[in-house]
Length: 603
Image (cartoon, rainbow, N blue to C red; front, side, top):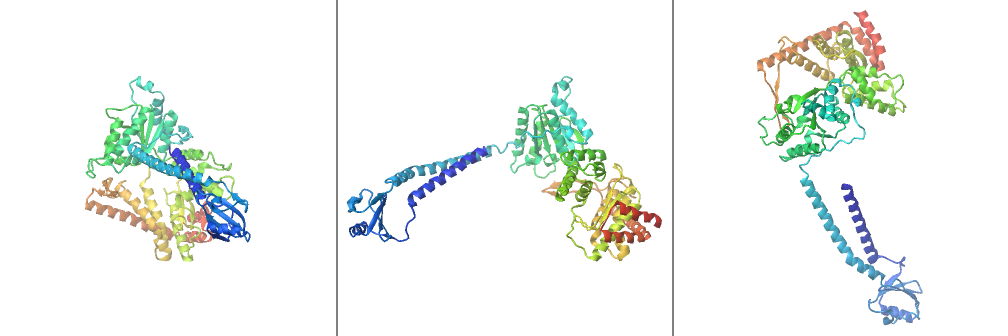
């Protein structure tokens, strides 16, 4: 519809321009190139000049008489339309007379004078009517859902979703029901009306929902929950009704609502009133999913990474019957994901995606896709024909730490401080048990960091012991301890280390019960959000809050003493590593192995 309107608008504009050009040409057009020596005179003077023999020839163009003298001067005069040249005493037998297209200008002028205003006025009214009709249609469709059936060219199936074995197993029942509903209805079984996909961002919730529709071969409606909510109360509820009406007409369908927490937050907070637009929209979703008028052929999939804030009515049986948890991929799943994203990319024969999967713990499927894409960009920038293992390593560092800031130049003293700082992290990270292996140390700036120590786990871990948390805090404080030991002063370079160490210590005390306060969870939050502000407060007493702060300070203080003691004991190796960093700027596995070998000797 928009394309057709645009076409007729262009045609109307083109016709208008053509008519205006014709009018201007007819009224102000010229015949040939006029001489620069022209005079406006009366017809009587031209007649007198003819008698004197000074006129060479005459040209008549409509009512315009142009007399050309023998000295190349043009005498211009105008006659009345009803009079001929003989009425003015001009005899064509005495002087040559040329008449150009008599009455042509008058005819065109008459035609344009009659039809052009009619066309312009008609075009104006047509344009205004179309605009009014478009505004009326827009107003009438304000409460309609903007969701449309997904019509992607590439069909997504479970084969395109690597990992997520348990989630796919849960959803395979939904697919089977959509394909053969009679099989379940014959036994009186009811398929879940709704399935809630819960997991961190980028783990593959939307992709998995597309795969369900692709496997079943049914229409797939997709939209974000925020698209329901508008400024006017009732619009969101109207859009929900329209969406489910569209889905029911198409028979077995899948509706996917992304970021469900945008409208599904718990009601009854006492803020915003009972007629709040968000609550009206949520009420309509509840009715459509399990009310008096429901349709088992419509299955709702929804995704969120905040299941804790959803209204309990959404989670009861009959609405979102199942909650499928999607975890971050383990090493084998990361390898499979990398293989999928490497399908259309030329790789070197000796490339090892398992090494890349080992080096990317904690990354989601979206992160791994970005790793492969960044590696392809880096290879293209370097003029390569294929992606190498080194490209993947640099891509991982860029994803985890940010791009290199090669243009940032540090002073010699700053470089030395950064070298000792990173050497302190690396030495403690190698010596203490439970910590991840140190694979790279660099004083080249990346992102917001002036230098970095890259540690990667040797295996995926689900359970983390208390000793690992304590040793992580010691390692985080190792950079600051090295500065204090060597320069007798500290800098702002450890600000991020202190933030992370404090966060780990707070979680140990309040969440994991790893302190002298005992195995108890403290500092729970009562959540209340109003006008975009988090008005949460902790439900523990001031005395307990003070004890929590004391325990955090105690854990940090003990780690600070241990970090200084370890580096003081191995100060020679600390000096050696700092010197190597100042020379080479980056130390890889081979160089680190040689330096760490001296730690055993020093011990």
